[in-house]
Length: 168
Image (cartoon, rainbow, N blue to C red; front, side, top):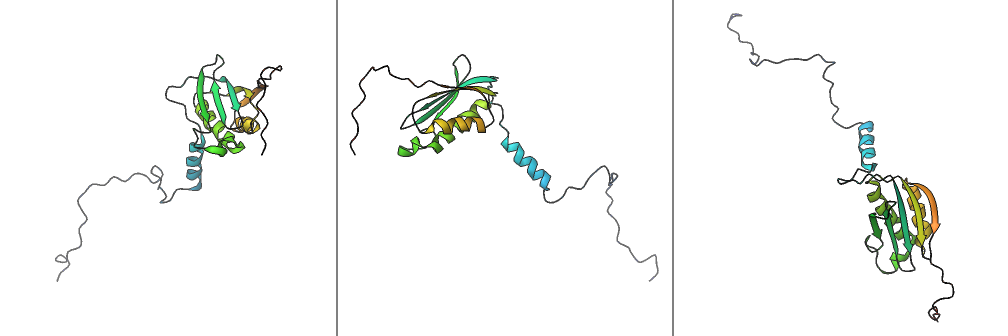
């Protein structure tokens, strides 16, 4: 056979455009550590609520009784932005009165309030319960600036007679 009769494999007749190598970087098959960190940091940020109220200063009212802890975030005029309680956070019975329940309650309400732009708060604490200190610490640890802390627990001036003591 002659050279002319041997057939070489033909290349397909499709036109391909090749860009310079510098213009199109190759994507790695697995994400890098920086990509993973970007994803993690994106989840931590608190996103603005859809109907955001744009409130930068507010009041936190913490009601801590022997049986429950309730937290309300409001604007300076008293309109409630967000609230939470131990029962709303699925604590039942004696678990509602714990310091951990107060911390979870405060963090949930604070995240919802921060979504409306809240940055500075005045804290008002009422009641003798276990959740007082835990709730105040949770407000500070979540990143809100605390301007003042006020105890508004009502103190009787020898008014009503207290209930009889329990004998266990």
